[in-house]
Amino acid sequence: MLLFMKFSSSFMTSFFLRLILLALVSCNTKAILKLPPNFSVPAVLVFGDSIMDTGNNNNVLTLTRSNFPPYGKDFKGGIPTGRFSNGKVPSDFIVEELGIKELLPAYLDPNLQPSELATGVCFAAGGAGYDPWTSLRMSIMTISGQVDLFKEYIRKLEGEVGVDRTNFILANSLFLAVFGSNDISNTYFLSPLRQVQYDLPAYTDFLLSLASNFLKEIYELGARRIGVFSVPPIGCLPSQRTIAGGIERKCVARYNEAAELFNSKLSKELNSLNKNLQNGRIVYIDVYNPLLDIILNYQKYGYKVGNKGCCGTGIIEVAELCNRFVPTCPNDLEYVFWDSSHPTETVYKKLISPLLQKYVNKFI
View 1 (cartoon, rainbow, N blue to C red):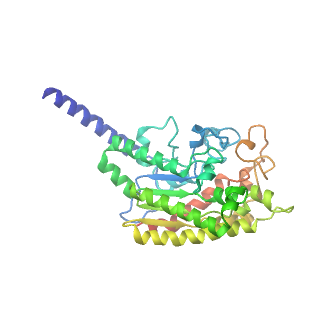
View 2 (view 1 turned 60 degrees about the vertical axis):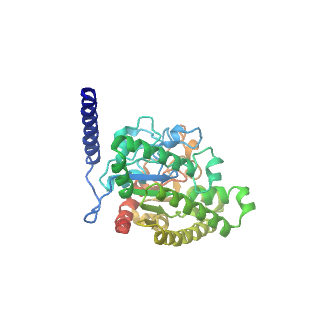
């Protein structure tokens, strides 16, 4: 009996210390976004591609990495963390805006602290897509692999805070999914395999079925508030302009039209899921139009260059091609794009705050 009491006392002390630590972690950032009354977001959990990846690819055997200079040159300490940016990425700005914490850690980061789990992590992997072939052809974690990490996360979180608190966190957290760009721009338009199997409308239907199945799976695992980003205007990325935009490197209309086709289908599918998934709030988040406006009207937003990245020539360098041996522009604050595929930190910052303000009420 005495042994049991000692064990019980030790367990309770450890348990309460963990809760106190978790409370401290979750309160160390002041919310920028004004949330609706009686609405709280204990954590943010992100699935996706290089737009959201905060360093998972550092721990995967792939060439699609960014954990080397000049990536991260404007990050705290000038450290390349595996974010495909000169600084922070949307995952970071979202948790900061919500007042959860300053940065969203990569789940595969070997230095991830257990206390971080209750306030959210990032499962995203640069280069990933809804289509498993998108990831496999580049030796990148598939979307199902990201879901497997989520399942492991749930077990770890239960060990940290218990089953009841875990269920509360999952039901009230903000889940985000950002896929589709690599599927359409790389797997479909630049790879013959899928074009042999599908015409474009059929391929977007195929992607839609994969997206829907993914959302149903994480719903079954406990997710209720899920934001799904649209595919951005991929035809206006510097790399795609170079590959398919002709001598003048214009935005590639057929790539943008493909993105719009998929986005239209995605929006309708999410409306359908909302009607069928009890207590689910699955929200379509349009990033296509606000990002396109910044790209086409870059001077209005204070930029001087909208069709090239800051890294190297700006027309093709990305991932391993954007490296320490490649020069960068004198001032990345003048550029919409950091490399040939990813916007600069300032563009992300301009996008995220208005998006959260526009869509936060839809998660209630």
